[in-house]
Image 1: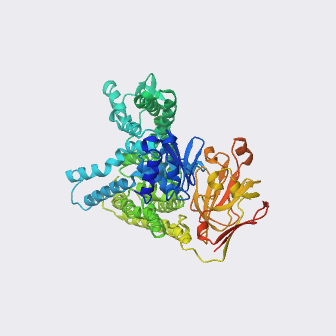
Image 2: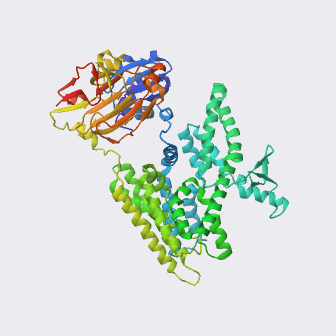
Image 3: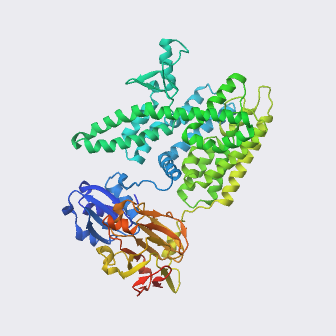
Length: 635
């Protein structure tokens, strides 16, 4: 429970109880309820409640105005009212790469702790085998390996649940989709074995699709088998597709039978398409990468080392590293040695070193707490906790780890290091480079490769990465009331000025959220009115909260009820927790398009912590241009 638990209980009780709530979202200042019966809500009690500014009713929504801390209150209301909270999830914005990172990290974040624990179990097991405390055929090894390997083997099941939450699919349906992908008889090897049992070992596939062998059909369509256990990409794509089917199904299927008919049609449509289309596409990508890596290695081992070392972690993220592993197995089987995977050896150490450097620079205590187990897992060669939970969401550290891995890959391939077995991971993988005659020179070179990868990853991160997250102490800046004679707020928007009391929104007009002015924009651009930090940027980009370096908190709310546009006609150039300089462009918006859509563009500019100041003085000008003084806060 959060610190607003008691307030949340009172709000839920006075909007008619959890049974009266159809849905709940929030914007920059308000809880936006959709109630079954608004007459059950106690308006007067809510308006006079400590922690509630006022109550508004607009657009079919029952709005409880809270203030800038509405996200924290929202989280507690969700818990108290036993709501899913999924309606608050907003589509990720930015370019395709950023969206992809958002999806991947969103799918992996919920089970990072379990993932780190599993990696540590696998590492301990490998250590005990290396120290010859028991063999890899003993019951001890088998049990610990099962414990550590389960989360990886059944990855589609776990991702089926988390991806379903991300894409707003019924989570139980997501689990079933993941379980279906792990079902033994649908794996590619099982389909091939079943066919060869009748047609004879080594019999050619009777069908093909997109040039890939198919040993079975579904409704007459060739079914190309693939191995889905431990995979990542197929389940995410299938769940995303299934979510769209669910959305359509809910529109056409009567509510009384949706409980079982919607999942029925989702499974019946999404999984066959997943097996028949998504699986073959992933297989094609794997085959293309295999051919590319073979050609590159024949051309230049050193260049191959740089490229594979650099991209290895990216391949692991998408499950496409399986395009390289079969080549190594083939070489080891035929020649007793292989160089195919040598270039990837330094990746886990570069990743681990980056996390070590981040540990010293992170401000987020929760994220910092994830570093030690991720470091331990990384030393043992399991880097998923570090990648998905720490470095990938921060982007730049992940790239630094790729550079360190590329340097190690170049060294090891140029030095002619050869792998003789496919043995342990991480630090225990150094024994892979000892040949059958006992020559350990390759192992010695692998230690140099570890040093190169780790040193480059650590130094790049330590000296060239800065955590942009705002320290928890930032809020204390406003609480401490730093002594300055006055705080000047330049206008963030050009236009004509009107008293805040003339706003068509009662909450703003009554000054319930603070003191300020109203601007009717003549230019669709918001700029930073001072040097400071972005405290809040709502996903719909219609409102932004700033805190100056001296502690003044400012709310800029572009238009009225423009949250309903869901970000359309708005473009943000900053993110939450970004540091900004006066005059820097924060948001652009299309005035004409917003007005044509039926929305008022009047923009309240409000000092939300006005009580911290002796007085708030507004500009007396009728119009205001770029850089001109709009508000003066006296201390």
